[in-house]
Length: 293
Figure 1 (cartoon, rainbow, N blue to C red):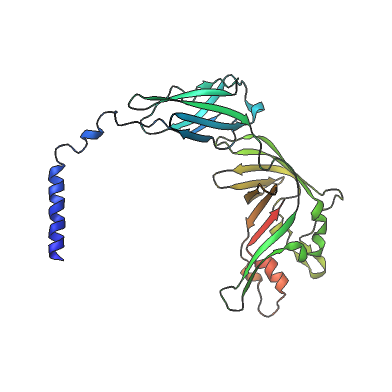
Figure 2 (cartoon, rainbow, N blue to C red):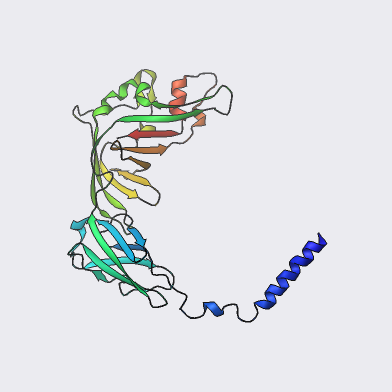
């Protein structure tokens, strides 16, 4: 051990002596600053994150926007732009782009003086949620004491538990996009109707005095607003009473469906070992609920 330690210390000493001339010599000046990348960009009317792609000198940025929210397509303001270290551009925040033809150029110059033209294109935004949806199912995932040998887990439709939920099947949920916030997150209004029969299902069982409406109805009845948070991948739904519900969003592109998920609190105080109806226990305790539209 002593020999290895001695050799290690010797190597360090030689290295330190060799580097004492000028360890920063190669980093002085800007000749080493070759980066010409655009890290992120946000323009007027933009919704979502810009798609930035580069293959050598072929550099493109695709932006989606709600075009009717852009005051003048020939003067689209750059709200924010982040460049690689040492790079600069005349197209900074506060300047404008002429997107009349659908494309514009942002020129980026590296610290070493090399330039790269980025082609920026804009396309109409179409939200994953925008449009009319029906309720395909409401499901819950249950983990009931799986850490015990007798425990179980299941992913079940709540319709099989609550007989008064049936009218929910034809409900219609309409999402409309109105604009985007300062981060490019789309927002708008929603309306949750009772469908053709005008009725909403009951997340409960009157004969057993069960009421789980507050627990399971995460897309409230009537009208309200919504916000798509891309960074956290959630949809924040706010009802007419300003009550917020955060739902995780999963888009099933192959089937044209979306899944909205909500993690529910574990209500251990409702569990009883002596007076047990396992259907009640699963509805009251299981921590995950998801609805497919």
